[in-house]
Length: 107
Image (cartoon, rainbow, N blue to C red; front, top):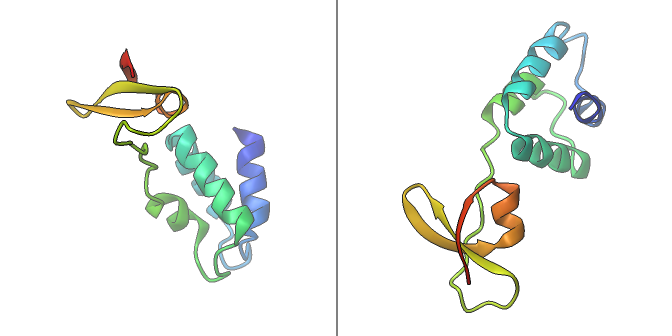
């Protein structure tokens, strides 16, 4: 987790003179986010760093929580039925494992 945050912080490259105490505050907030959100933020920041004027704390705070991608059921592959927010949905086994979804049935 620490190495991911350090990679995020270096890729973000914030102006530490403008935001001198933000590393610790951002790290505390980073630790509260899900592993999926951390990976998504890291991927996005390494692909395209945000503007230098954007405070990294608010970037982590405002970043939306990733949602699983659900399918119709006519796709090929290792599909499973899961329970999500009280509904039964179909997704890949990989998605179910990533989001720790309860697998109800193999499709």
